Image 1 (cartoon, rainbow, N blue to C red):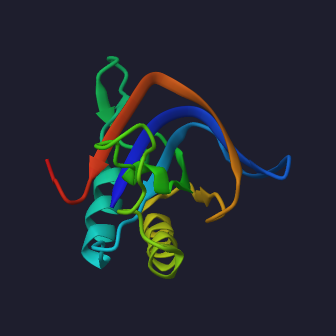
Image 2 (tube, rainbow, N blue to C red; image 1 turned 30 degrees about the vertical axis):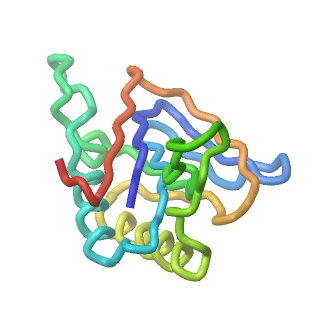
Length: 150
């Protein structure tokens, strides 16, 4: 399971030119699922993200979590996080899970995040053509892969 996390001042998802969901200060989490992902990946990744200290304290040190600042989280499915660019110029998405596995994993991840985030979790719509708008605060962007738990 891969996530690209962005610290945001605000973020929103539009579908068919209508706002589907939006958040204020917090985290935008782009989430990619692969076939090998399991509940342990969801547990590890949701815990890591909810406790990650990437918000500034009063001394301008990144020392606070999204819960510490009463922030929100927006989770958006993104199969392209599993793109392989090894051969040629057209990315391959063969590692990205098909919906029969990816949808339950995506929904379970959102439920886990809702249990961990005090101020709320919103989401995009799996498989929809979405327009994601964000103001990256910092900028702070972090890549996490549950298969290489660094």
